[in-house]
Image (cartoon, rainbow, N blue to C red; front, side):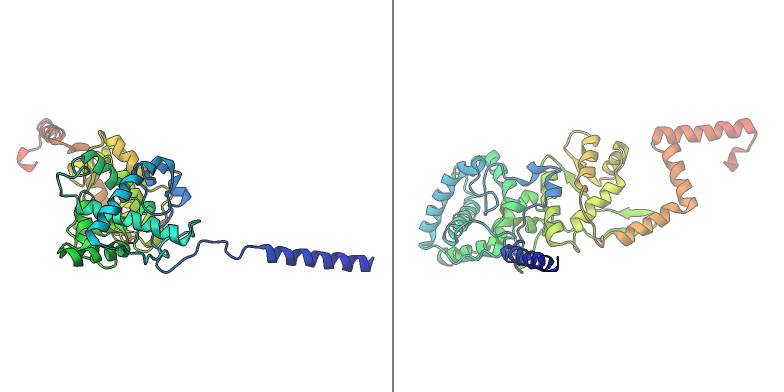
Length: 363
């Protein structure tokens, strides 16, 4: 029995060795230091997959060649020809390490794709203020293109676009930097005035950079809270910025932190009504319920690490849990929620005082 056992053991070792040899050397996506463009994690995409996919135009490799976005390829080729005419030459030194995945595209085809998409974007931005241009004369089409250009999976590295634009600028003596061209084109998504930043990775990152909330400050019982405007495009915009933060900025996820804080504050339509009255939320979604549903869904599957609002939230909870503050807040919400209820409460006190024989001067 022993020789048989030894033979069996030898066969087992050989099989294990073969299995080890057959395991592919590359089993995970390459994590280059320059990586900043990601495929949206499945757990986030599952909640609202339409928010992350382009509807009109594909930029970069993630959605390249998909049937639903092929119609714009002819326009890209036309814009490439126009751009080459402007500059007299083309840039072909393209780096592909900025993408999270390794794509089944040859180096030459990859360069052609990036070159085509880059020149389309630059030419699009340069034509933006030309009222005679066919694209600029179609505001609705431009809005759809803008919405596609801000998607996380639809990005090109910012430095590629800058390099191509610089070569054009030298020949045309243009004073506008690509940073300013980009900021002007997607200005409807930019919240605060921007100074040029060399660390911006792409358009999704640019919008995130413009929306860094100011620090919350608590002044006695008052809270200075950053405001937010919510419309039909807000959910898609925030979802893509939050997906970027989950993948690239897990320790500086201030948009995720802000929306999580809103999620804690909003449970009912009455909560939305209060925030609207305090001018913290302005919306065009049609109802308080729609706003509450949107805010509550945005934080699903979001992982928070070291929220920038953690200390403030702790202070607010401590303030709220003090009996005196809690009772005063309850009285205010029950008896002085509005002018009419407050007036009725005061009249009730006066009547009660009169019937009880209490001098009104003491009231």
